[in-house]
Image (cartoon, rainbow over all chains, first blue to last red; front, top):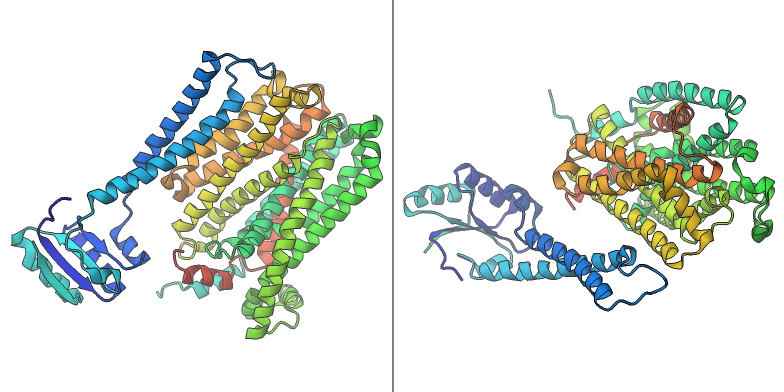
Length: 168
Length: 417
């Protein structure tokens, strides 16, 4: 629940104009911005560029934990309470691979959900959010120090933003 | 200079530069098949025939895998592959050759099928030459006929649209396929329906007929061994090889015709994901069969695996596991390696080679007492088959448009799905 930094919030009606503005902002050196869209829009996605989500690290960590715990659990159980089944060796890897695989998937999926929740809560109070961005408008919030605000404001208006306001 | 529009590319693709493929194919085919003839009538008929058999299974599966992927796209209403789907469908050109090779295999039946000399009583009349021959021939004819029908109908609107670009022999071929199709809205809807009916039929026939081929032409080489999964194992592996072939052809034609604008990197990414997925699926099937045999521990089942995974054949067994699973798995898990044509091609080639070795490993140990011998006969005949495949493929590419305007437009209009 971080306090929002000061910046500029611009609202757009058209996708291509918004995408244009994102590119222009990046050219001006404002790489850090938050974009709100009512629906997933590929043009916007492309304009922002590909950034990998931090959630994938959670998935990897969870998956590897699952693999290791699957191995540890089956092996520990086999040797802690030795029962020979079907004449096979006590710690037989072939059937345990199935359990290791399932636990990889299970913990991987659970930790992905956990990571999703964790990162969503951290950004819960998003800066400058405008409820209309859940309806039919596209919003771009740019964190921006006071001395550069007028330049950014002018540029966004020039590009065709329907509304530009300063958020503190 | 004006920018190249998709329309120009469609026209260009109706006249794809296939002479390179055809020339290379002709040279390889003549040399390879010449070698086969020399060996088959000469000193080492056994090796020649088994190499021929392995390659028939590999290339027939590969061609059918590609065509069935197109049918799958129709069934699931997939649009993303629209601009590259014909690189898979073009494998139709190999099917007549494949049928011919099937007939040739039965000329060398005494070198291949151990149950001819030593009938297996437990299999009764199921394994007799005429019954195996006729049921396999009929199922192949049915499968290939369905493939032709499916691909021809899928191409109809494209041929109608590009009819003005071609003349002479190609023109008359186009006319024959187009028939009285005029491309009106009603006719187009009816055609879509027809293709949508043919696609699931083709998929079912693919699963059924290739299972039969796998049982009759691979499993029967070790007549005491039974695996219910083996049919699926063969045709799913074939789908993997079909997709890998499609990927290689995509890279080739993209450079050759200059299709960068309608085959974007995104398509590489998607096809790479699919190959990655089928890599895992192949492993899944292999492992599930292995696990059951390991658990049951019955001599008639385990000996099939022991021969392939221990002693002399072990290196090949390890190579198959590494080249079909481990290397493509770690290679294609990254986005960057999928969208880079060089790494993409490398891993697909590794996967294809691994699948060839897998076919070899399924067939050859049943036919010989010795360990693996990968020498001139095997490599030469494989190159000969590659040549035959390229001739069939190149003939299709020379005749028909290699990019479907209709399906590409759908893919592009859908944008980036």
